[in-house]
Amino acid sequence: MLGFIVSRGRGEADLLLADVADRLMSDGCKLAGAVQVNVETRDGRPCEMDLHVLALDKVIRISQNLGALAKGCRLDPAALESVVGHVERALDRGPQLLIVNKFGKQELDGRGFRPLIGRALADGVPVLCAVNSDNAAKFAEFAAGMERELPSEADAVLGWCKAAMAR
Image 1 (tube, rainbow, N blue to C red):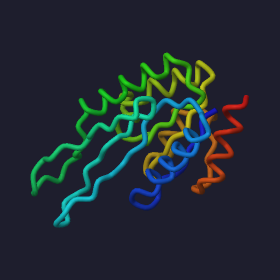
Image 2 (cartoon, rainbow, N blue to C red):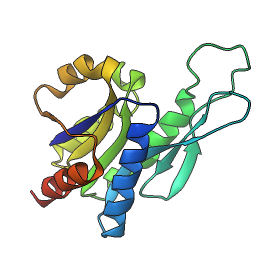
Image 3 (cartoon, rainbow, N blue to C red):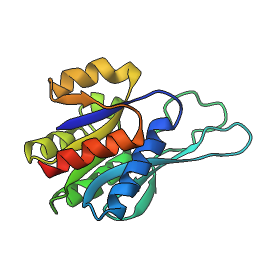
């Protein structure tokens, strides 16, 4: 089972996934994955992007400072792969659900969390992730009909997660 929400407004999907993860962990659910926590900065600079590794209760910064005039992607691929390594080890411990903050450019290119999503699904572990509307078509190609779009509403997503974990 592969549930996803479409990321619309800036940071909305991050907040929703973090809320769902917090509520599931409060209920004693065993999770693997990562949710994004953005740290706002001063003077109109882009936010800092951090991933909270759920199984470790650890936060890792995945953005890099490229300078005031930089226009390119600020993702630090090495930091993302570090998070992926932590999540992969958490998958070895048999979680009930994998939560991935985003199926983004790295995943579209076959990197990032993409192999872990495939592994979790093959192992029967349901997956929840966010997808930017620009990447929805490519995500659908990857998901090959296994995906289910969920409403961007915490109670609905939480209900899907609990039903998916109960199977």
